[in-house]
Length: 102
Image (cartoon, rainbow, N blue to C red; front, side, top):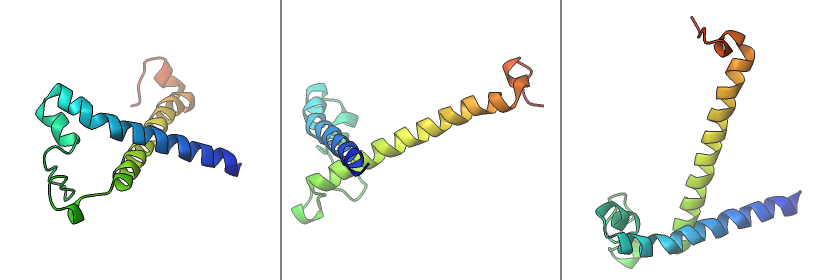
């Protein structure tokens, strides 16, 4: 069990690291304002100033950890929403017949 959890964490870290490493290059290739802000080319106004003094910049590991956290949170939220969407009709057959909830 512990090895499976370690493998999942490693996969999340490696995926997030790949996203982190590819984003600046893609932003520069696209050249649009939003992509440049995401890539840290411009100040993102969140306190994580990528163009400011080095002591104020987040480390690469901190950014990768944030990507992992946000990806996990998005997957968790989506799976719960889908589960609830399919669970409600199973408890309320009138929803399946198009009657809706009144």
